[in-house]
Image (cartoon, rainbow, N blue to C red; front, side):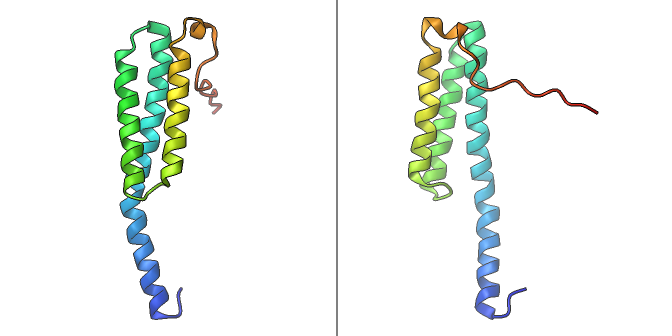
Length: 110
């Protein structure tokens, strides 16, 4: 436990910020994951509208998180760049022979 009143206040502020920032960070991370899954599905089905929408949502979520200061602006730019690079690489004709963007889930043993 903190010994000084200022330390107690700082701890209280940190916890409040953490609770406010956590959903924004989680939403950005899950949006990127959903976009990667949509890219994988689009490679199989050649239906790109869902992937386009998922990427748009992911870019928006990353921009929103960076604007609120939850993640650094350069981090958001890097994640958007990597996501769009995978998207554009998967739109090429030879993409169906390329390995997926995400590895398959490991088999769970009881």
